[in-house]
Image 1 (cartoon, rainbow, N blue to C red):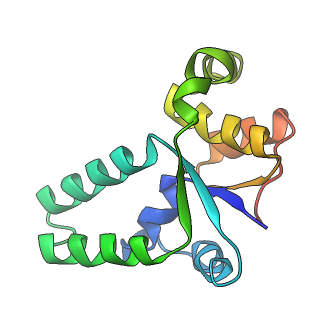
Image 2 (cartoon, rainbow, N blue to C red):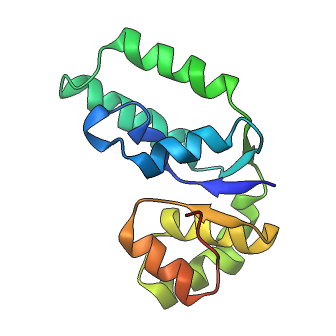
Length: 136
């Protein structure tokens, strides 16, 4: 079964100080399952990598290897997320006090009827309030 994975999980796979048993269990699930991400995810990821390089948390070579790893995983970018921006995303963002970026993960999970994997506590709480199951 598929699930939605957010950037707080994927970046923990690179940054050792953010890695937890939970984030490791999520990447382990990708052996047998697939993940969906909203269209904003690659941009969030690219920005996190650039910031990590600028702060000397990772080298450019490490970033490039990480991108290769992500390319090898069954993660699909959902292009329909952009169409949800003016329908569901803005409504969820307003109601839950989230950014449109964070709300896009919830709306994708709602539309697909699947769970959400995130370490972001505000996003977890909002997902629970709107009935989106969480990956545990």
